[in-house]
Amino acid sequence: MSPRFEPAIGRYLHLDLLGRPHRLYVEEAGQGIPLLCLHTAGSDGRQYRGLLNDARITANYRVIVFDMPWHGKSSPPAGWENEEYKLTSRDYVRMILEVSAALELDKPVVMGCSIGGRIVLHLAHEHPEKFRAIIGLESSPKVDPYYDVSWLHRPDVHGGEVSAGIVSGLVAPTAPEEGRWETLWHYMQSGPGVFKGDLHFYMIDGDISDKLDTIDARRCPLYLLTGEYDYSCTTEGTLEVARRTGAEATIMRDLGHFPMSENPEKFIGYLLPVLEKIRAGREASAA
Amino acid sequence: MLDHLAARVNGDANLVRRGRFVNTSFLIAIDNADHIVRIEHGRIASVTPGPFITPNYAFALRAPREAWEKLWSEKPIPGFTDLFALVKKKLLRIEGDLHPFMSNLLYFKGVLAAPRRGAAVATRSGGAA
Figure 1 (cartoon, rainbow over the protein chains, first blue to last red):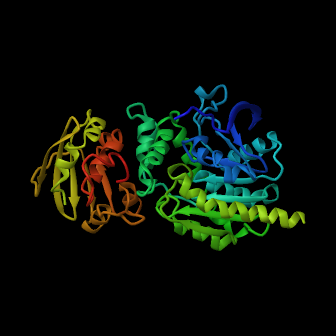
Figure 2 (tube, rainbow over the protein chains, first blue to last red):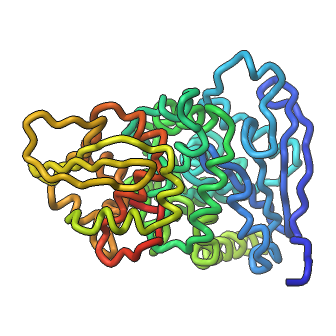
Figure 3 (cartoon, each protein chain N blue to C red):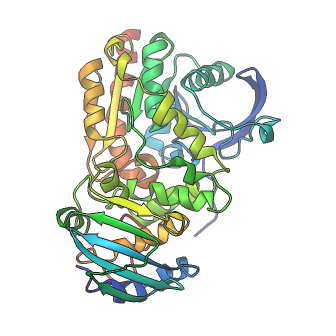
């Protein structure tokens, strides 16, 4: 193999986030409509490598991926050693808006998976005017706890390995081995207690069931893509969101909970038509 | 259903390596049929069918036969691809001292994937189960 660089550029963004100084790792590739991507709980922006490297997407979209604080190459804020990380709906919404503002994005498309797929529903509820379109991957209104999350953060269990073990079955059985294990590797590298802290939002604080009916996909186009093998954010959950909001939902064959990293090629086949629709909408409104 | 369990696990060098620190006994219940699996250094030393009078094991996985059959089918359908999928559906109950199980979760998922029909030896270690 001859050596080559990928087109993506990674940089550190210094900004105040939730009232504290942060140093956030941000990758981007492409030009055009900004597409702000949100990774899953306990993982990081590497999940979107397939998109950052796909010329069919980057020809018309500026794909931007940031590692949330505590995740990937974004460190926790100073003083983290004296606090317990717990993600809340309020902080998560603020974080996305503040990052978008810091990057001076003009009505971006926001796309998130799992916890990201949930928070975009909160964005659709609270701030639809700020986004050109919203894409929820593995979106569901709520997920009740189905195991004791304290196993994810205790000194006598390896946090990375147990986190990967928890999510391993959420990858579709039909996923290529390389995509499966790359996805799990990201989980193995998460910081202590970070996955557990994200699940506070996912399983407790982020329940949006009682607000779904007030989301109106006519105010901001809402697209939902969910893998058929996802038993955490179920296809039933996604279809419920679609029914109550007017969103357009597609159930993706041969994909699980991590479509963009477990099987990027298969996922991009589902994503491209959505991105084309959004682009056509912009051209129609500009005409 | 567990006829090939020991041969498949012990024939998977990567899976045995993943479980090299595991020394425990656990129980698999298929309906009311109990089996105690003894593991030594990641290898299955024995699979002993019940009934037992005083069974000695660290933890148990109990599910109806139909749930195990779906999990172990050659191409499991959505919702039946993983131990935790069955837990979420309340079809599988995992009870007892869970520390050996949770601290070696990828290993045990590999072990519990081994009975899958058509599963070849030395593949899918730690994958969906």
